Length: 211
Image (cartoon, rainbow, N blue to C red; front, side, top):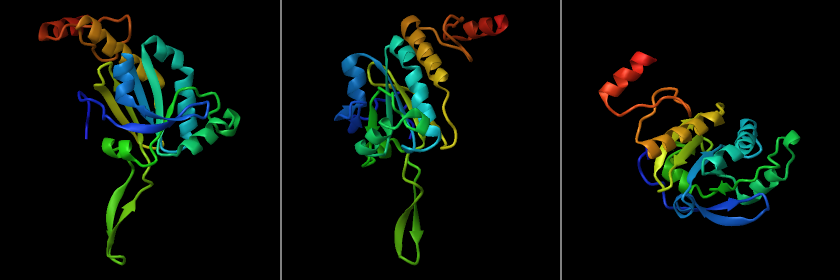
C-alpha cells in the first residue's frame, strides 16, 4: 500500500541508541515536533551481510543529512537487546560500532506490518488444516523520506540482496527542498545547482530543447 503524499503512521516503537538506552520513538512526531525531514530505512536483520554496509554508509553520510535538516533513523524487527549487541560489535567483525543514529526495534511488527513491508505470506497447510506463515517475517529494504509536516514524499522497497545508494537519497532531499522553496519541478537526473523548470508544457519543451 503506497503512502506517498500521506502522513506517516502515528505509531510509537521501541528504539535503541548507541548508549544502550531503550526509548519510544514516533517517526511522525520526530518530523513535526523538530520541524525536520526524516529518512527512515528498514533492513532485514542484525548480524547479517549487506545490512552493516548500509548502516555504516548512512553513518558516513550523517553530516550531509544533518546539513539538509534531516534526521536519519534505522529500523528492523530485531529486539533492542540484539541492536545493542550489534552496536557493540566492531566494524571489522561485521558489527555497527560507531553508528550514532537511533534504530527502531519493531519486534512486534506493528509498524512494519502497517507499512506492509514484511517478507511473509500465508499458506494453507492441508495436513495441519490450518494457515501457516511462509517467509522470514522480516522487512525488505524499505526507505521512507518524510517532510517537516510528517508527509511521505518518497518510498522505495529493495529485495534483500540489493543494497541502497545513500547519495540518491541526498539528491532526492535536495530536489524536494528545491520544490518546497522555489515552486519549480525537478527533471530527470536533477542535482543541486542544475536547472529546474516550471510545471507546464512550455517549460518542459524549453528544458528539453536546451538539454
